[in-house]
Amino acid sequence: MTQSVPAGRVRPEDWLMVRPEGLYCAPADLHVDPTRPVARAVVTHGHADHARAGHGQVLATAETLAIMASRYGAGFAGRTQALALGETLSLGDVRLRLAPAGHILGSAQAVLEHGGSRVVVSGDYKRRRDPTCPAFEPVPCDVFVTEATFGLPVFRHPDDAHEVARLLEQHRRNPDRTIVVGVYALGKCQRLLRLLREAGYDRPVHLHGALEGLTRLYGELGVEVGPVEPATMAARERLAGAIVLAPPSAIADRWARRLADPIVAMASGWMGVRQRARQRGVELPLVISDHADWDELLATLRDVGAPRVWVTHGREEALVHAARGMGIDARALALVGFEEEGS
Ligand SMILES: [Zn+2]
Ligand SMILES: [Zn+2]
Image (cartoon, rainbow, N blue to C red; front, side, top):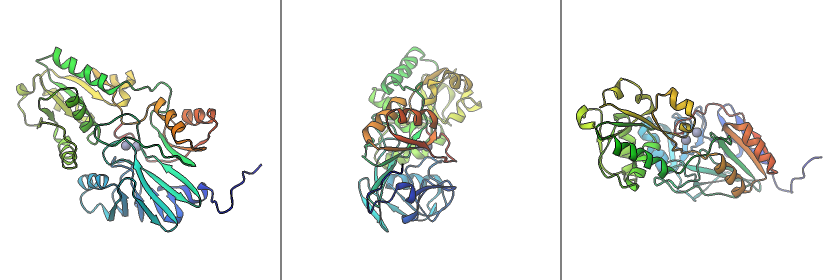
């Protein structure tokens, strides 16, 4: 039996398809988060697996454009166009709008309308409150394109305030030791700083040099993180009893060993997997994720109410299976090139 399509309605798969460069909207000549240089791209957020340099034109929020310029240099694209959240742009007979994704500063879902149907490409997202960006907005649609980074029932992230309380408890108990926390440079670092301030920690937090630029940019874009000081040059003794944030690559190497009797922590959704924490030599795993966990993924499928769901990067199979159990026509898109920056 063939499904009937109302007159004048075009099926989404006829105008939005997987190309080697990524998801492609043909009538707008527009790629979403392409992994190779294209003529025109809408970029959902600044993480490196979604935001690449070298496109002819980039459409994104002003914050994402600023993040890309800071990472790749001002000439990262032929031209750029900033879109405010909620603003609609017409590209031929396609309408494009950005809706908040709650993932990191500047993150957005791409809402595409054409031929009588609406497709929402969510990029990366989470449903919890994040003091560095507006909350995810569920947009009702015909097709919802979702990530599945933590798309297994074992992934259930605890409350972030609880994880920060555990960090501060270790800090209180170990006044002579340095706590070094591995954080992704874009998003996790600044969110953890804000969470520490909300928990009442008002002393300077020391930052590895690799985290300074984006943290300064967040400040310029209105996300206040309180007093921070460089950790790279600070004397070892001064860092006893301090909290130091560093990129994940630095927490287990010689850089971290220079610190005073360090307690190695890491803030990531992956810290819910004990083996991952052990592999990285993490003594204090903090489960703080910028991606939806299993319950958030399922709640989002219910909230957007899309009869069809396309699953992109992550653990696609389990989410496709669960969505089908909810009566949704779900399938995995074979998108390549997405890693896990900022998990
Ligand atoms: Zn991301
Ligand atoms: Zn991603």
